[in-house]
Length: 386
Image 1 (cartoon, helix red, strand yellow):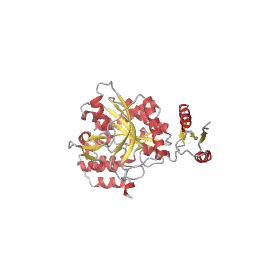
Image 2: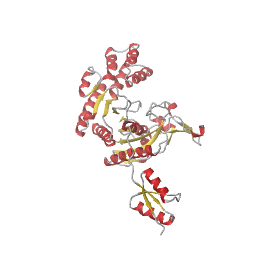
Image 3: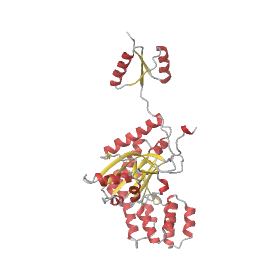
Image 4: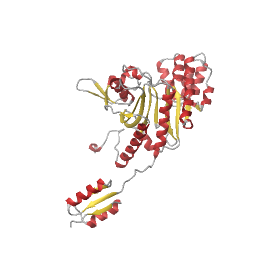
């Protein structure tokens, strides 16, 4: 019966799932607040041009679009970075920098529905606006690592890169835009066979070809950067390499370097990233739980140029990584009796004492409510009518 269906890619959260989701969100919010981040809430919809200005490189077919009564196109927000950049540039200009902001929100993108991927998905995350450099990047990354520890995600690892390296290599290649996008997709997917096939059809410097082929498999500690060819004639590439080295040393100061590896195949799918990017993985999931990085050009597109960095965590993916985690249950009192006034008064008193109380709304006999209490594991409080 179609009247009972929900659209593909969307999900109901039954009580157990909703409770687990709220627990994760609260733990994250408490942790973010302890690091000095303040919560913000933005509209679920944005004008389409607000999203287009950010140059995300998101296909318009991925957006949920509809028309406002004034004729302008609206879109359900596809991420939270853009709404926060728009909000900060219009409402928070007078606040001292850096701005440390966090959110818990649902975002929307058309996608092929699969395990852990939905058209509507929930994110928790942070944005730091108005701070550049390795200390800001290290703080955000250290916060992401601490969040995963706080949530109980086991065998968590964060993969780190700097997109300046790849982007500058692409610029030196002189390739057409379509070829650049295809190489980026193949590197991100670590499709070595497809990458070699694509590169073999292109007229490229041999050093560039070898480097592009190596990028998807270059991962480990700082030592893997020594495997890159000598690009001293291209200072922009070397600047990206040096930034990674400096950041890794800053991460040691935060005590999280054992959770971080350098992976030169991590590029992220959104074009607004300008420097450090990262993704977080759990050993029992084949896709990232979180992702983020530096996006220094986005704020300027909204008329308030400022460096920025942040990350977002997929709540549904965290739940998958945690597996069969059970929602904690609080002991419940079932209050019953024939005198409704006394039953209601008793329930109020117990709630004021901090107890969870359910009222017998059927007016059943003591034997009946005792049976119900035993079935649910509830404590029975029977109120005599004397």
